[in-house]
Image 1 (cartoon, rainbow, N blue to C red):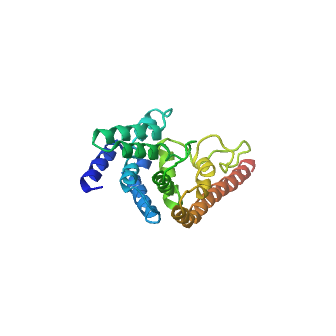
Image 2 (image 1 turned 60 degrees about the vertical axis):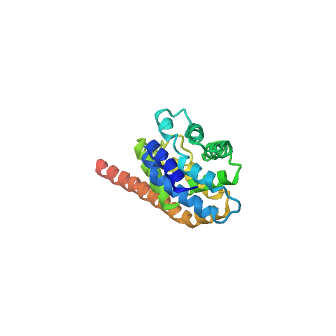
Image 3 (image 1 turned 120 degrees about the vertical axis):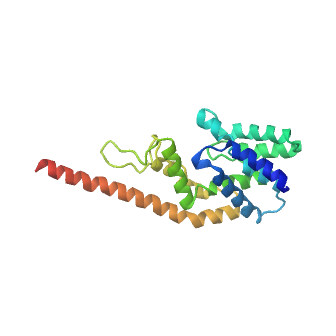
Amino acid sequence: MNQETYRLLENFMLCCMEDAAHDKEHIYRVLYNALEIAKTESNVNYDVLIAACLLHDIGRKEQFENPALCHAMVGSEKAYQFLLAHGFELCDAEQVKQCIQTHRYRINNPPQSLEAKILFDADKLDVTGAVGMARTLLYKGTVSEPLYSMLPDGTVSSGENDTIPSFFQEYKHKLENLYSKFYTEKATAIARERQYIAVEFYNRLYQEVNSSYQDGTNELNRLLES
């Protein structure tokens, strides 16, 4: 891939990115993660990989406007049509489309090609560690979802059995379980290095919030009964 082709893809990506948690910097981090992973693999099609990384989230706007849509499916078709319109080989355009279709975590459509697996891993790495926690908090704020929910007994829910969306619920249902779901050895190793900080952050946040409610409730009841 030459500079002209890269800039063409990059400019199209920049025109599509509006989501604060899935902004252009997320795209660049995914691309750089993918290139780091690719160095440890053989026979990588870099034209397909770079195009797929740059374009993997271009369907986010449509999904944000209509949550019934899947950004992976919308984005894969947008990318496919764009690539064909700009002279890409049909085979490469189809491979990029497949990579984008299968990059999403919550979908029963696992990646098949090496490039698709690298994109999947690179994208998921950006939800691990400190950056993953920060991005999740940013997204939850954007869609006005809370940090946590309360249980009927007045205690703070850990998020484990919650159905109501919150940061704690997202951590327990997705973030906590990411670390064993990578396809490549390199991504698995990077994720393991980042796991400690994510666990520590969640545990500390839960402890601080929970103790605040426990201590505060006890003190309030004491004052009201005096």
